[in-house]
Image 1: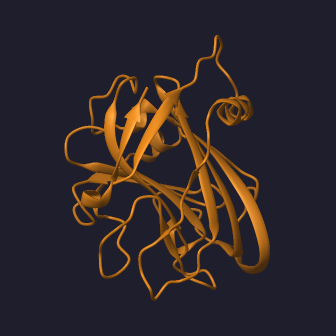
Image 2: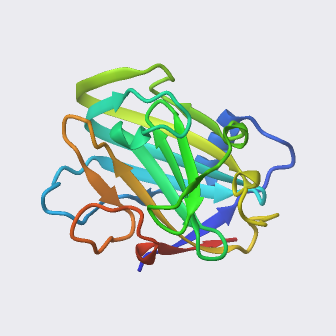
Length: 215
């Protein structure tokens, strides 16, 4: 099982998303999303991420290089997994997990629950507090093929864990997994940070989450 230490980043003032991105890159190392779990899906884009926190916010940045990109979903809590998509699933407390999903233009899907079924959406008014900036912009487009490199900076306030009573991320012990997918891209793919031991692609399996410790 993979383990990840999430460094606390200290700033004497509130910072913009671009400043947060700079501080994250200055103080935090990258981690790869490169585990191939399913032989029928053998395309692996290059994916890395950085993650840190400032006590009441998670700072998360993805770096992706891939042959095919797609970004059709623009609805909050829509089917972003069909697009070129990065995901962060986390159990911050108790047994239920949150699935943070972002397509490559920053459309967000966020829900909470025990498994794939019976999930509850987080209210869109809460989701709006998440700041996202993609180097691909925020306008939708259909499948494109080439050699694409893109980055996405994400800032998640602790209030987004709206079904949990979490006041601070400091010293939080959690379980999580990080993913890259693209169900309706020209080359569907499913790549994970921690291995997933299922016969077919399934990200909604918290028993395969890794350990995450917040400083």
